[in-house]
Length: 278
Image (cartoon, rainbow, N blue to C red; front, side, top):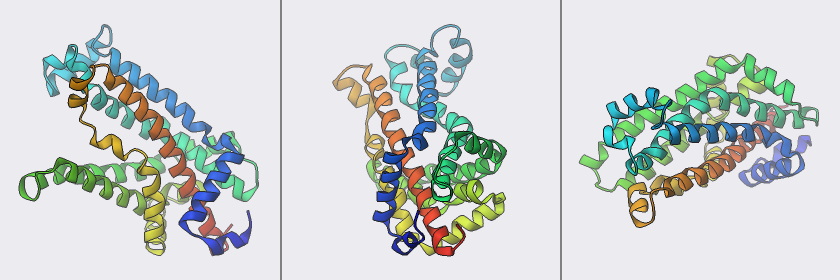
């Protein structure tokens, strides 16, 4: 990578270089294929959860939070996307974080040595997992807290569910952008957790608009899924469409996550070129 590329740090240049890296070295996206396998496994577990032997674990939980009818067809398929989201969160903060760390490491290696190494990235991700987890939890808690309080807007400000969903989406993008450079700071620069927070916030202050756009772009891929009325869709078609919905969601989430992770890492590395730290 040329040291002059730092002088051309723009959203389009970040996206273009990210695309070229993925095209030239698709191996940097390979960790997300393993994440996809875990998503599919989670999808299968959720689908089979009303059946024995999984029902012995999941049935009491579904009864307690949603009621007995959601254990039976077709109501179990209405709940299917919601339960998948919970399984996805569990995968994201465990196996998914490590896979993201590997992709970040391999992308950074392309700037530093030109040849990405799975094992090197895996070692870094495992050793620094709890620091990455701290950043992930911070983002998750902030977004979750806002999503809970935002429902008050339905009572006092607007009756539009879509408006609230869009507001939550935009807030999520803002929080992601604010801490986007946190995990790259851990993986690439080996920063401790407090230092990675400071590094992320400081860099966000330097590039607020550019970083918001870099984060927003990939997230727009999954935005339409947030507005889907699953019950209405099932009534107009067939109950099993919820399974197709989740399968499609997995595909587009992976596309978004791959491009988000590579783009943010490219942005981070190009900024290091500007700083003269590469």
